[in-house]
Image 1: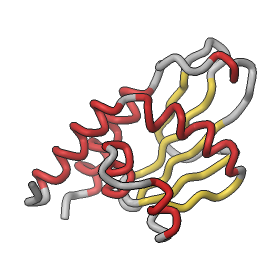
Image 2 (image 1 turned 120 degrees about the vertical axis):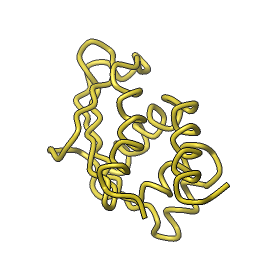
Image 3 (image 1 turned 180 degrees about the vertical axis):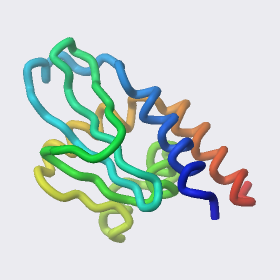
Image 4 (image 1 turned 120 degrees about the horizontal axis):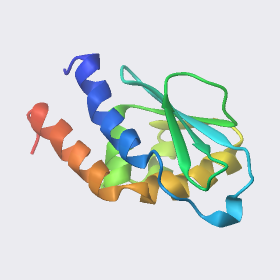
Length: 131
């Protein structure tokens, strides 16, 4: 198993790429934050910024909704090789708080940087002896 520092770097690369991305202006002025927490890999808060861009901060913080999963499940959902809905049903992905906030952020996060997600997923599999 990878060290938590290494794991944080892998998932952290995805969130770094997401920071500053523009979002659907229909949500401009909304004050929403979704926290993503990963077993042994840390947490990131993603907020809708006043300037029309996503703001990502590493670490814990207040949020309207919290999404929790393993790094592996999250990266596979991002890469499209695993269904978010199926992962929810299997309790591999949990949502606490306002589900509509999580749904809004899924539009930004799941489509925010698919190349970065796929690259991070491949890197993680390679380092763990996968394909």
